[in-house]
Length: 171
Image (cartoon, rainbow, N blue to C red; front, top):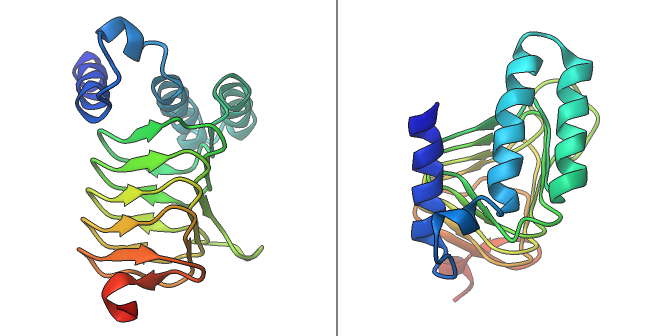
């Protein structure tokens, strides 16, 4: 556990040039939200749904970042200026993903099963982006600020606009 914590601290320090010390990282809502999520996710997997949701709601109140306890989150995920981030129950986030404020990884209906996006490794999701439905965002892709993505994105692509379009397709 301490290795993962150190990994997360090092990742935040690497990705945010405003950080001057480890002590500042401790103040980051991203750290708190991800730590709360680790606890709530374990409770969720143990089918202690109410306790899991209680912890996730406490985290939301304290950090402004809402992560459903069922979401799967990889290593070295950084939520920068996280206010307003929403990550749904069946969302899956790979390793080394950066998410900026106001991002929603949401569903588009009330059906059962996979309803939220899967985000590949090394993806950057710009501020205010909405990625909706059971779609996949390929590794090394970038989602532009305020984009609304409703269709899967292949790896190594950049998506912008409403609705989101792959950059090379609109140039």
